[in-house]
Length: 46
Image (cartoon, rainbow, N blue to C red; front, side, top):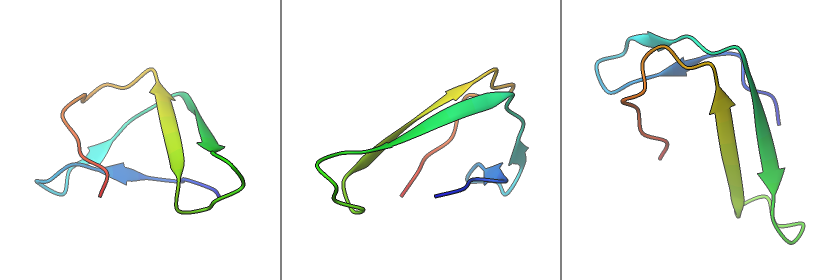
């Protein structure tokens, strides 16, 4: 999985330096993400 851009609920781009995406138990529907160096921290992933 590759993430190039993130947006908040107001469709504003979230700037970040780096991040990690980890799939749990080899299940692509079960994953977690850590984003580092985030400028706008109010966002939701659905």
